[in-house]
Length: 66
Image (cartoon, rainbow, N blue to C red; front, side, top):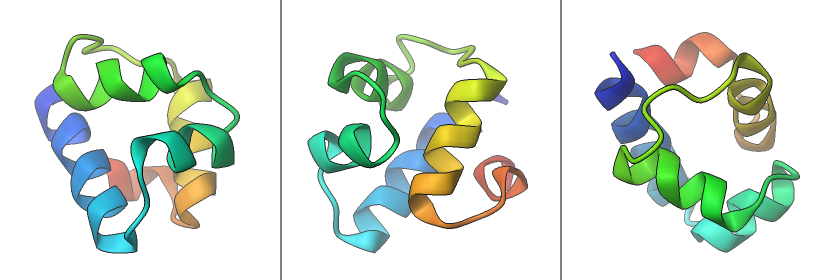
């Protein structure tokens, strides 16, 4: 499942046309956190982190798992 979340975050970010740096700023996260999630280096991001990313994208958290 973590792989799906990582892939979905990357796909959504690219679809929205924003960089990892922009996403990290919009979500109030460290750039390193975003990079590690997208690459699968951090396979278990916290719920809080996922909520911040979803909010930055303007989508429900469930969208990250589809």
